[in-house]
Amino acid sequence: MICCLLPLSALLLAALPASLQARDYGQRGAVFPVIERDLLEQIHSRLTAMEKSGETARLNQELKRRTIARVNRPDPVDGLIRASESRSWLFDPTITLAADIRGAKGELIHAAGTRVNPLDSVKLRGPLLFLDGDDPAQIQWALRQQANAKLILVKGAPLELMKARQRRFYFDQGGKLTEKFGITAVPARVRQNGRMLEISEIVLPPRKVRP
Image 1 (cartoon, one colour):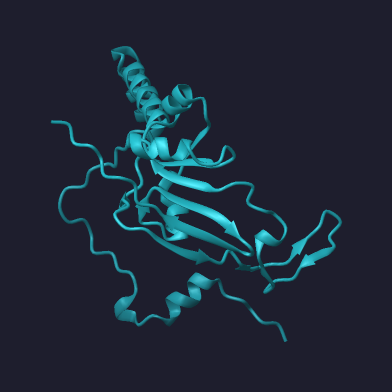
Image 2 (tube, one colour):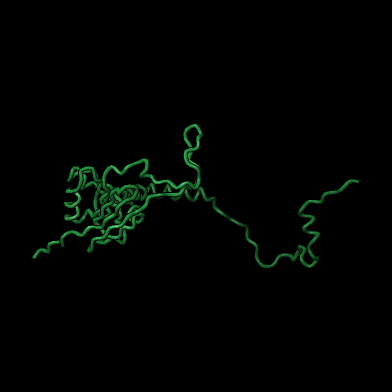
């Protein structure tokens, strides 16, 4: 017994009611040919025109200027204020592994689901100090702390400060660290306390108002 396999399109057509099958209704209204300019040709023409007019050079210079400006002065972290009251709390850095951690030879180091505290293997060498780089009082406070402290700006110009103070300054890009630690006011300090991190927001003397 030989089975004849109809093409899929023929089977679908046969399954449709006669009223839904295609019919020739003739031509109604004017018909125009589809004319579409090649997209790559349009792009090439546009770029050529921009090059000749000097627009490309202008855009490159603007991009360079904006990039340098952002490096010199990154966007400040939103939502942070100058500390008006002192508060401290403990932060547990323990994480639960989502996948197995294996060594170079494939040996299992930690299985998925294991709770790991990074401070058990890597100690915090010095405190992390979060500060507003545009506030002279916070700069002075940070520079008086331990020499091995990491100075992390939430606002300001890190490159200018590095040149002026001869210290390395970091920047909390996008507020990822302050958000993780729950910091809402600066200056703030993060330091190790056993298997925990002790976080403090510190009140400084009020700014002196010039007469």
